Picture 1 (cartoon, rainbow, N blue to C red):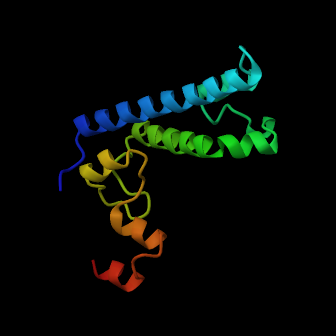
Picture 2: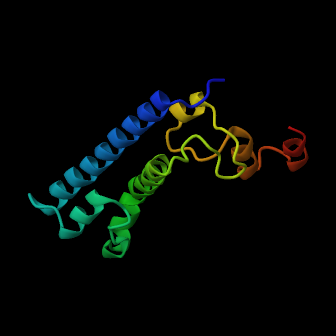
Length: 131
């Protein structure tokens, strides 16, 4: 199990930014195809970040169409904020280090494997306390 190093953080950040750019481009392209050649005005705030975007501007059908992408953008932006604050690689539940392999496999992760298993109900609490 490798520790999270600056090079791992750099790799994770690069992957997150590439994923974010890909999702924003996919939404933009979809909107251009649906709306004609111009994207709606709310898209420009989305490109700046989900904090700036007002998802209330979506009608219900449009929101459900983009819901997965918007959820992914929120996860990516949360992971980028953890990097900015120096918290990437630390489990938000228990404070233990998240292995580099997990960070590279799931760049948006905020939990170690043990805590994620507890969250998903796949690990009994008494086993977690022993470990």
